[in-house]
Length: 254
Image (cartoon, rainbow, N blue to C red; front, side, top):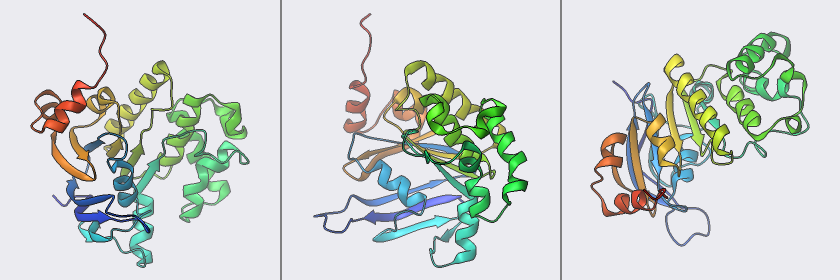
C-alpha cells in the first residue's frame, strides 16, 4: 500500500540558523493510520508537521504525497493536496479570525479550493458544526462568543468540512482544561473511526497519544530516535530518551 504521506531523509534549516532543526527524518504514514510525534519542546515536532502540511520545504530529502514528491509549483497536485490534507492548530484563540462569523470561517476551505460558493457551502458548514457538537446558531456568531473548547471544535469543523483524507493536529488539546480536553479527544477518535481519516498529531500528552494513535515516533534534537506501535513504544521503550520522557510524566502517589 502506498503511504499517503512520507518523509524521506528530510532536513530543515531555517535562514540564519546555525544548524538543522530536523535532519535525516524518515517515516511513512499509511492510509487510515494515526501517528504521534512526541518529544520535548524544541525537538522539531512542529517543524515536521509544517513539512507534512507543505508550509515548509525541506532543505534536504523529500516530502511525498501518494508516493509522489510534493511539488509546490505543480498546481494540480497542490490543489489535490490542499483538499486532502487539513490542519488543526494548537491555539483555538489565535487560529480563528475574530472579525469573521463562524459560517465564513468554517466555509473557508470550500471557497478557497473552489469546491463551493457561499450559498452551496452552507449545508456542508451546518453539517460540520453539527458533527462537532455545536448548536445550529453557532454559524451566525463570532469566535469570541465561544469557550476555548468550543473554539477548538470550530477549528475541527473547518478542517473536516471538505472531507479530507489526512488531519494534521498540532497539540490540539493542550490549551484546554482537563474536562474539555477529554471531550475533544473523544471527538477526534470518533471522527477518525467514522471517516477512516489518516491522522498525524504532535502532542506532549502521552495519555492523548495512547488514546488516539496506533504508531508513535519519538524525536530528540531534530532526529527520530525510536518509532513503532504506540503500545510497544510507551510500555517497552527501546531508547533511553524515550524512557526518560515516560518517566517524566507526573503521577499521583500510590
